[in-house]
Image (cartoon, rainbow, N blue to C red; front, side):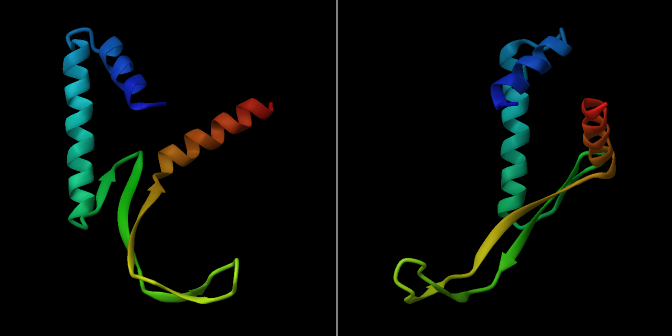
Length: 99
């Protein structure tokens, strides 16, 4: 599902929302989530999952082409952990497909 698909589904599901209003709502939510993650905050959406920012310390790695040592700087990486309800729903859909 893409962002535009989400906007279309929101506008279709909530008849009182115009396409522009749904687009504004999706954009506002995603921007606020991105801002919170940039600040290092944790986002938890019950039943869906949580987003956290993890720190990867600096390290020494090897260039696979020539074997030279390369210094890799510290990074902050995004991590998503699905919630129990989402995991169970995905697992149930897999079992339904297999049956």
